[in-house]
Image 1 (cartoon, rainbow, N blue to C red):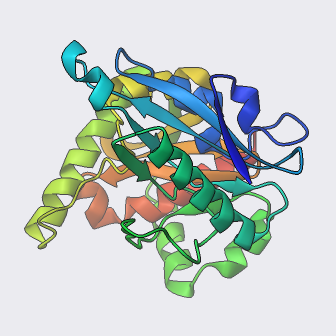
Image 2: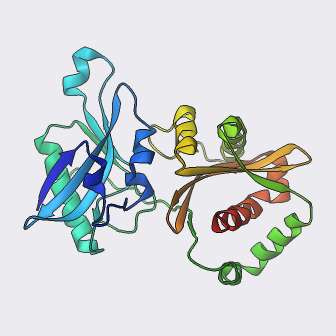
Image 3: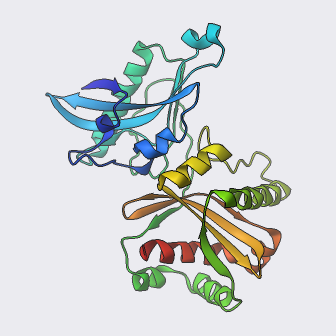
Length: 274
């Protein structure tokens, strides 16, 4: 198994030329481009055939004298086997890690955003942290999804519906609303004892990047308001029949009314209507 790095986004696509994940998609990665950050793409080859792919960001210091000794790699999602074999996912990662070491990268961050595999054996020195994620499955019908909701959740959504809260897809200008609810959520979590809570999960995510992601079409921003008052917001990354709820939160009033669950449901409804 061999690892090859390329600046060509096509290197991280499947046999049909499609991105295997929102987080390996060129639209996602290009949004992060900066003086010291650039997209990079990987393919894993065995017997002359591409069997796996990966993509991420190549980083380096802004200081010229440090650039040669500060290069790093950041992948928002892991190595993807094109045949869906979990064992191959691990093999690709180990091959990728060997490539990183040989090419003298000094840091490596690998996220697991919307990632379906669990590496079975990791190289010595690699640390793993387990966490939960929200992935919205858009392949089911609304009736099927409704049946999967708990009775309490379903009743809560119906109760909020009757209040008259309006949910709309918003543009770049509403990122300020998203930042507002994120900061409200951070304050609430901190007060509740989450001292190290960080709402900006993805590495290198900034307000500028959020705007670029919306403009590229790979992300949607949904905002919930009642009589013009901001209550909640959702920032969702889209990939075929799946949507990844990357950022979101509610104001104190939004929490009291349990608008978050209602907004999640309306987000699914709006996405399925596209």
